[in-house]
Image (cartoon, rainbow, N blue to C red):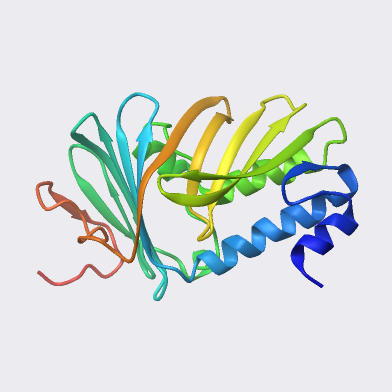
Length: 222
């Protein structure tokens, strides 16, 4: 049976309103989209609410993530999650730390990302969590539609009837395409401006113009 047919039988549609009894299908579908998307490599550029910009780069295998943020044209922060370690950069320095093996299956550190972005960005995992919470509330309404943002076909969800309504859109690869709402009391407004398959540039290291503090248990040799 096709996904569209399954959604209709569950009480919702691929373009329309998700009724309460069909929302588990929606959440499971988004989670599967995220899982499959982790195998893809891409470079995504964003406009942020304050006029700044962000660049999200994902490598599918080995799985690596890089988030770089700008205020205007000035660098403002970076968070890089590699297989065995994590790099965090402020405007003053970069720090590299070990990534515990118990952390390998965990989503990106939302707190570290919020610090790097100055509370201007939200991860796909956070969006999924917000949708899951809204889906459990009978008073909420979840409307779905297909749109094109940054040249990419995306799925958008408009969630109302909750304490903090929001609109969220995801690309086929699971990258955020748009978010307008509040996350843990922080207003966030971002939109995808361009998307390229593959890794562009060298985003998985520290900034070369900043001092590096290596806090790994066994620092790499110079």
